[in-house]
Amino acid sequence: MADARYSIGSLAVAALFTLPWVVVWGTGSVHGLSTGLRVLVSGAAVLGASFLLAWGAETAEKDVPRAFALAVLAVLAVAPEYAVDALYAYQAGQGDAAAADLAVANMTGANRILIGLGWSGIALFSIYKARSSGDSAVDTSTGLLSNSVKLDESIATEILFLTAATLWAFLVPFGIIGGGRGIDVVDMLVLVGLYATYIFVIVRGDVEENEAHVGVPAYLQGFRTQLRIPIVLGLFAYSGFLIFTAVEPFAHGLEAIGVANGIPEFFMVQWFAPLASESPELIVTAYLVNKARTTASFNALISSKLNQWTLLIGTLVVVYSIALGRYGALPFGQKQAVEIWLTAAQSFFALAILINFRISVKEALVLLVLFLSQVVGEFVLIRALSEAAAEQWSITLLFAFTGVYLLLGLAMFATRLDDLKRVASLSRRQFEGTADATEVRADD
Image 1 (tube, rainbow, N blue to C red):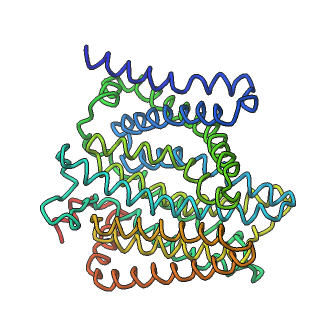
Image 2 (tube, helix red, strand yellow; image 1 turned 180 degrees about the vertical axis):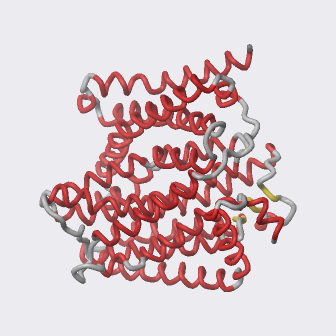
């Protein structure tokens, strides 16, 4: 009974965080709020929605394959990023030339934040929490910098599809159709096709033996199926509505505060707005780590990266063409072409790290330091130089970091060829549906 009261109370508190936003949104008074109050109310809704979404995903694991539940969580958690980027793509189609570059900048910023802060930060947080939680997914038997998070080998499928999307991303700036820079219909077909195939593969999986849950998910899983499924769908629908409606005002409110304090608008669009829109995903994964569910946390992060790196890029051309009134490739400038290459190079390096199903403290720190040093370096250039000079030096800086990521990634892949073969073997088994990861481990 005490557990039930605690779970009901937790659900009520999360819902209370969201109610002010529902009232403000429902009455159409969002823009009547001051910037600070708008950020506070929408931010509280995002926080409450993040917990409701996490509880829904954990509860769903009783009825559907975990990978599919986490994929749904990932799509809903990063839905705001799609909304913000779609807005810029639509404005570009309506004739705002600068908006096309903003769409690409926002997309690349979001993807690099997910790895540079998300993957590295959650890895470091997991290893820190393991000291008290005893999380079996964290190996602390070696030296401090070698302590690592052990990832579930079932993510081999995600790694395979993410690798394919990353390799294709290097080609995007060349423009397959028309020969100019732009995200075109070929990019859409390839990237959206990759994600659709991925969903087809994971949805065929069996429902895994349910992990022992506590708190709200354990309480909700105790309901009979006829009631539990509508509850899960309701949690997904409500949290998805909140995230979709509240994050854009939250992000733009933070953006306005930054601009008012002298931070350039373009920099805010690329970094602060995506950071706000990624906040549900980061909150959810931190929550899972706090419950000693590091494996599920990383699975969610990797699934988020996969859908952002496929669906987000692939659908921009659709929105742009709708606004344009005819088919057209979403154009972008030289700097955004280099931004895409840098984002692909960062993904390539991150995959080289994960290919052995581990991420150590040292590797997480390298990811974090490289990400932060590039962002800080670019900010310094923007503040210190004229707009034209800053753009030229920024392009040079981006090329340099692209080279560093590629060299590090190639060096790591060269020493991990056996791990690459292992991922291929695991993925083949999962494609065929003939064995799960444990069977492959036994064979190997």
